Amino acid sequence: MQNNDVNDVLVYRLGAGCDLAEVEEGNIYQGKVQGFANFGVFVQLNDRIKGLVHKSNIKADHKERDSILVRVRQIRPNGNIDLEEVQIQVYQVQNVERKSTTVKIADLNNRVGKTVAIEGEIAQIKQTSGPTIFTIVDETGTQNAAAFVEAGVRAFPEAELGNIVRVVGEVMMRNSQLQIEVDALTILLEEESVLVRVRIEKALDARAEPENIPLLIKSEVMENLRPDMRKIAKIIRKAVFTSQPIILRHHADADGICSAVAIEQAVVSLIRESGGDFDAEYFMFKRAPSKAPFYEIEDITRDLDFSLKDHIRYGQKMPLVLLTDNGSTEEDEPAYKIASVYDIQFVVIDHHHPDATIDKYLLAHLNPYHVGGDFGITAGMLGTEVARLINPKIEPLIRHLPAVAGVGDRSEAPERALFLALVREQYPEETCKDIALALDYEQFWLRFNDGREIVKDILDLTGHAERHRKLVSLLVDGANTMIEDQMSACMPHVVPRILSNDAHLFLIDVEINAHKFTFPPPGKTSGEVHDRLCKQNIGKPVVTIGFGPDFAVLRSRGVLMNIPRMVRELRVEIPGGGISGGGHLVVGSIKFVEGMREVVLEALIKKIADAQVQSL
Image 1 (cartoon, helix red, strand yellow):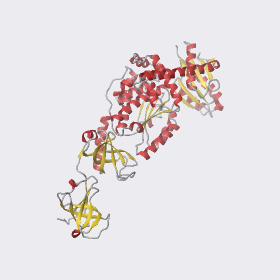
Image 2 (cartoon, helix red, strand yellow):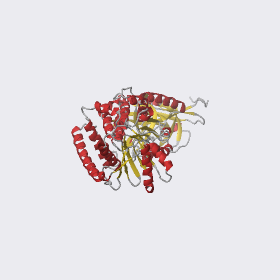
Image 3 (spheres, rainbow, N blue to C red):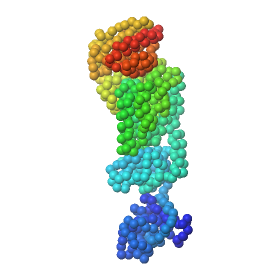
């Protein structure tokens, strides 16, 4: 019976997933005119349900697709619905959704073939040539939900990235993966949305908390860094659980590669465990070497271009950017400033001497200098410990990487010996040195591609031990042949000097006295020269400068320099020098304008002469 009190008149709107079970006799529903017959008008209550208004119960003239209000007079045993048109001027509309059980995403495996409801945040909206794929995140996992209206047409266009929604649909298996075939997607109202969001955030915060596991070795410095390690691991775990893409940038040497690959193994395995697309690891995670030993503007330009395109094309969130073996110095700041325009989030794992101005751009910063350590604790050591916290299951695969990083970066810290002892039976020191050299050599030919599968073979992460040994042996032979060729060309051109502090300085112009555009590049060439000179001058303080038209690479043993500070001072002292650079305290590089090379080098040498000499 129709009630004329406008506060009591309810008109029901059936959701897309509703079927006959949600239709009740006596209720009034919104519908659309579907077609006409001699005996009446067919009315659709949704895409699945239609009924008939007998011509005797039609109150007005209509045409196809007109909206119409109808009351359900009778639902016949065969499912046919008898309707009558009603005319109401003022009424309240109430949405009706298909009766379904609200479940957590982690429980969907037990619901295949059943209609369920899930509540969560839209983490990605991907429009395919067929359905629209919504990636939904709740407190237990990630799930794809496919909604189809028309091939290539966006379903539920009102839904946006970050909305809290309720999705109703049937749980299906597609290509051996769970998928929800969406019947209805509803954006939750503010009050309910807040409750769901708070519930998800609280659960995700607890889920992202790393396990409390011991370090691989006993180290006071690394023990003091555990809070920062846990903080970064939690940030990364939460990014994975919320389907936030991760870009991992690293220095293109053995230490940077070891750090990055350890984290890569942890993140990729966690992505696989968390559900979603079978190929999610390829578009939710990207590892890329940096061209320079810092995060430069070219890097952020490429990363922004990549991320913005994916945001537009695939509806992805903006990424979390993780920097390892770089990211701590003022040279990184211009890139950070550009990234801040887009609210890009950064975390840094580094062992270069940090500049105080950097931390304002970072969510977290792991650096041994923060707790009284130094660059001897390498990025590979730090990255491996963070990786174990991200996903402890991958520890057996990566526990040798800190030893490779330590020898590759020529660490003299006591932690190097401890990490080597940890894996000595399978990876003795000479083997670790060979792996590190193979990494440097292969990365040179990769230029600045990640070489994901080749690098895994070099690091013995694929389970193909014989292939690993053959590949490393070939790469080491190739590298040593080219190093010896380079040394035979440039060692005769080394110029020695004795400084006022008794330091033995050696200079080599690697631009005109070494092979160009081949392995080893100028930085490594200078390092190889330095190693040979140290062996020739046992017990003496040695500094080597390999220079070119507009750069110089510095290596020191026994001379207590502070290269980042020297660079800052020279920048002030030599107007027009165009000076920049940095690195570790006693290993680094400096750039300048070509016309000021002699002035800069002499000023640099004077500062080296003023440095304290360590007794060896």
